[in-house]
Image (cartoon, rainbow, N blue to C red):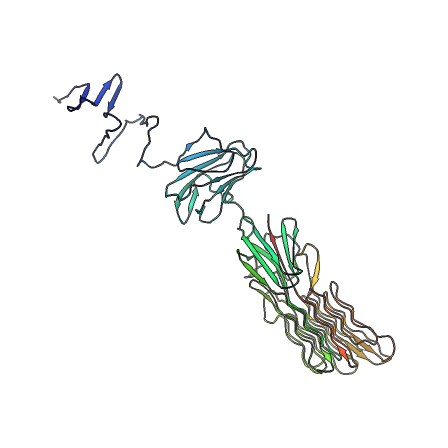
Amino acid sequence: MTSKIKVDNINKVSDDSNIIKKCGTTTTIGSGASNPIVVDGSAITLGRCGGTVALASGATQTGFGRTGTVDWQTSSIKTSTFTAANGEGYFVNTTAGAVTANLPASPTAGDIVAFSDYAGTSASNNINIGRNGSNIEGVALDGVISANRDSITLVFVDATQGWLPVNDNESSFLAPGFVAGSVSGSCNTLATDGNFKVATFKGPGTFTVTCGGNALGSNSVSYLVVAGGGGGGANVAAGGGAGGFRESKASSDTYTASPLNATSGPGFNLPVSAQAYSIVVGGGGAGDAQPPVPGGGGCSGNPSTFSTITSTGGGGGGSDNCSGKPGGSGGGRLRCSVGTGNTPPVAPPQGNPGGDGAASGPHHAGGGGGATAAGGAGSSPGNGGNGGAGATTSINASPNSFAGGGGGSATVSTPQTGSGGNGGLGGGGGASFQGSTTPPARNGGAGFNPGGSGSTGSSQTGGAGGINSGGGGGGSAHPNPTTGGNGGSGIVIIRYKFQ
């Protein structure tokens, strides 16, 4: 027979306080708040199968851990900025406007919080989740609840991943960030085109990025970098090559880009970070002048730069006894050789070679290379080659053309007729010489969208490339003194999504 001990109460000898007391259907273990109960054993079972173990009102627990739930604070609906506490869930009312809920500072692994849209208004008035110094989903970005009646529970895992959602891990929980910046330098501007900002640099300056954004908003920029055009040659001379033309439209952008838009490679979706970027806008090369320097040719243009992107200045146009110079686009020639384009090589090509010429019979020089086409060849009797075509882009909100080659010059004798070559889009026109008295002198036209017209008549001076077009200068015609057109200065345009 099994032994039994039957008692209703067990009391301490010293003060007769209860250790175990049975009163009706309730059995109480313990003798007061100041007397802990220690149960020793390898396994402790509280309750029975199907039963309930409950903490008394006002009691707290330690050491049990959490089961992925929070205590919802239904008596305190949040309507303004607050900081969450570990183990609590909050209903947030954004009827009157967006509300920021900051996560706990200095959390430890296992901390848990939750947020829920109280009034179904978080699509129009967001619940912004401030990270409060910790990562969210492995990145240093705030979160956002932007769908009506949405809710999220977050658990802090470690310093690397930070807070991770356990009931809604859509990537849209992270708040989109956008590029933000400012412009400095004389004549440089920052304009708005819908959801985009357009920073235009017509001279040196600084593009200061104050926020690099993120992939959910924008974290890269579109750009156009055009170098200075080459100067035209002198004394029956060729047109200068256009400055190098480099463009890439970010995948988040919407404007109509040129045919030279880079859609892959290291220059595509060019990232920016919070820092100051120095902008260099290349000046155009000077046109050759005769006298006093016969045969020197036009000067090459200067490079333009932004971040990792450099466009090379256009090559100077060849004069009577010298070759066209290499560059972003090459200068044309009368004698010797044409200047090569896309030097140094990049992809897509930043320019094209200059055009051919002839120094026998009626002299006719080649045009300078342009962004999208080589310089045209001179043709008999005495027509200078057209400058190579530039490229048209709407990066600054309207179609504009840049980097056309300068037109080549021509010299004929009466009664022969001829004309200097037209500049490509953005390039200066070439000059021509037709007899010594009639018709009256006519200089090559200055270029910019479209290129300057080549001249006919007793002309000497080549047309200049357009300012901030990167156009090549037109070649000048015989007789001395003659002056080739100056190359046009370059331009840098940076475009980014700001909202």
